[in-house]
Image 1 (cartoon, rainbow, N blue to C red):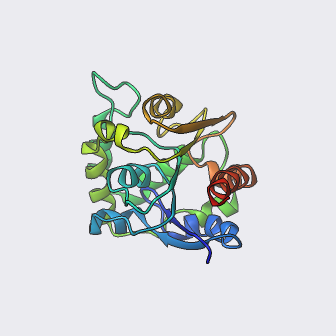
Image 2 (tube, helix red, strand yellow):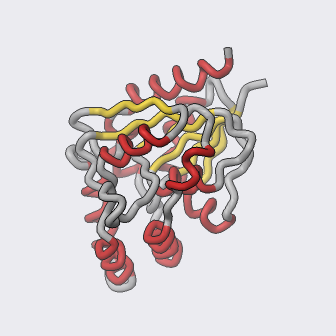
Length: 223
């Protein structure tokens, strides 16, 4: 029986954003797809042999990691989304608070700017546009931002003893690559790959490279 891979999307991304990854992995694994919004509402990550996720989904996976998970892949992830005096690798809180206010007034403008930064330094290709959010209710988007404002899994990292693959873009405008380097130095068993000329949306613009790296990492656990 094939092992299960659970793929969880990040903030403002629906199932269409992760479906191409699921299709690419489906030949070797039983793939399940779940949005970060679903995980946040249920406060539970379903059992799976492997989890592939990133951004808000990465924080949720680290916080709610099921005992069944044997390997974890974190794409464009961080242990704490907001910067602080003791953690410079994040986004200023005022940015998220401003986004919450603007979502109540003009959600299309907020999401347009967000996706522009997600895909930097590349333009949004037709495929990338198709992969983005199926416009969720504002309540879900705001709930996600409120979670990001308070999320902090740094103290849990020493307990994550399974192998973790960290993939990050050097030009990420959402979560700086320094956050991945910080994770790499704190997780007991981790591997880090930084992609040059790449941003937050690694699977959208470096699809083949990312899938090949993930596949090699996951299949090594099956031997």
